[in-house]
Image (cartoon, rainbow, N blue to C red):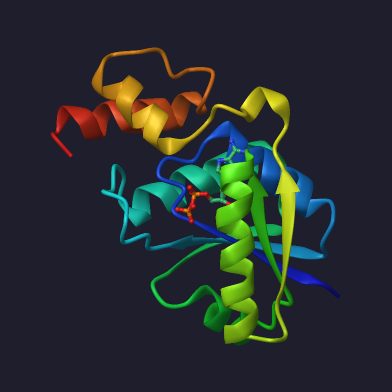
Length: 163
Ligand code: ADP
């Protein structure tokens, strides 16, 4: 039984993340999406909002074997606590690969037992990144091809309350 963890800030959850989750769910016996703190990024949505939105999407995709958790410690410690042996990440570009490669080395040093598995994005999700979505949102651009309608609504609400 191979248990995998897919950590990220998912702020907001995008079609790119959902694609990696769907493909990861087909590779492992169970998959845990872990909403982790990224201190380098200014949050748009709260962890509770992200969890609710992510869970709604997983239900509509029929992915019952995928769960969603929030965690504010080291991801490798989370893996240890739930007995997960795979840390799943997505890669959009060679810049992403450099970052993910270094992160995988660091995580391996922190926990020998966890292997990082990288899944390359599909071309249609290549330009999907949260910084682009934030910019488009601020300028009133169309983000409907990047995030599900429920996520778009939550983002518009969060912008209206000035988050
Ligand atoms: P983090 O802040 O930890 O990088 P993100 O929420 O930005 O978290 O991303 C989580 C994971 O999903 C990362 O491995 C990232 O490379 C991957 N990812 C993000 N967007 C895409 C996309 N469009 N296609 C494939 N993978 C993606």
